[in-house]
Image (tube, rainbow over all chains, first blue to last red; front, side, top):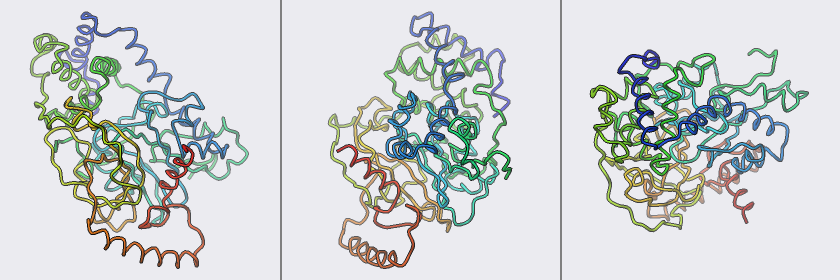
Amino acid sequence: MSGRDHDTSEHGPAARVKALEQLLVEKGLVEPARLDAIVDTYESKVGPRNGARVVARAWTDAAFRKRLLTDAVAACAELGIAGPEGGHLVAIENTKRIHNLVVCTLCSCYPWPVLGLPPVWYKSFAYRSRAVRDPRGVLREFGVELAADVEIRVWDSSAEQRYIVLPERPAGTEKMNEEQLAELVTRDSMIGVAKITAPGNSR
Amino acid sequence: MDGIHDMGGMEGFGRVQPELNEPTFHADWERRVLAIFSGVLTLTGRNMDEFRHAIERIPPARYLTSSYYERWLLAAETVLVERAIITGEELKSLAQPEHISVALPAVSPKAAPAKARLRARFKVGDRVQVRNIHPSGHTRAPRYVRGKTGVVRRVHGIYVFPDTNAHRAGENRQHVYLVEFSARALWGLSDRGRLMIDLWEDYLEPVDRSKTAIAKRNSVAARRKSRAKKTRTALPAGARQTKTASKSSVSKTHRQEKRRRR
């Protein structure tokens, strides 16, 4: 997949997309400024830092955590987080016994307002095909080895619902404040392919 | 359609290969595809189903050898021409013909009834079977759950039905359910994992119309469960499979939600 992503040849996607955009602009169908704003939004404004703020708040505020698990859209709105692909957000909680993993087998559904645009691996054929059938094997490839008695729940985002995993708060972070905790939260942990470890706790 | 996009459970794609410190875009033209995508959505009344189906109609060999944003570009071109927002001639003038207009023609379903179905046919805890359907048009019922039996864990509410909306054959609004399947039911695995997936009402049918048999089994199981529970320390919600949905964390959440709304 990688080689074609960088195609810059005359008839490759780079030339086509440029010509197509030009045509749409000439016909007055799209406003270039508006399109630029959208690209800028997803490149520099919306990303997994949003989700990390949500997770850190849930770790430090029990009432918020409860609201998040009950109605993630409303809870995220409290933090000013909303937008396309986030109107039907659902938060699912990891526990000692249950590990959640999110996938979209049919395309690339992903909770944009909290995580930004999906990484290439999330959209890859390998992940889409295997996450539902061999989640333990997929997790192993991400370096996550779960105990045999941990139940894995795979969430296939097939409708309007978008899922974000609320990872477990790692031990040894009791003295950290919300901002410090948010720094620990990774994108992958909110998709469910990583665990979070406390700093200095290399495991 | 039973297309290449319906990948859940397929084998042969190898390992998942995450990229360290991956940038949002890998080339400038990918940025412009996102821009055009958003333009196309605006021009087509935000019909994501139609756009998704245009991706699905890329022939399998092309689908597999195109990158993600190339597929989006192909879909954008397809939708713009099919909606007569641009002409095929205009598109051809943009690039070499062999690079464009590759989507297979859509096979539209029958027009949907205009009236939304407001009453949910299923409730939390109901056992349901995914119908053995193979529509040639768009669908969000992946192959790997068809014919399988699961349990309704949440009633999400009423949503536009993609199978007709993708073809602009009506919104056919109906309930969507979160349905849980065991790894055993789906893949014959002994792993106690579960698969949670959101399915529209038209994809589902009730299991065992002779409710008596099920009710009887459930009540026996429930009695056994409540006896066992007394001797057991409480487990985290949802840690154990229960036939009645009331123990799952999801349905608990659902109840709280309902209570809150009242």
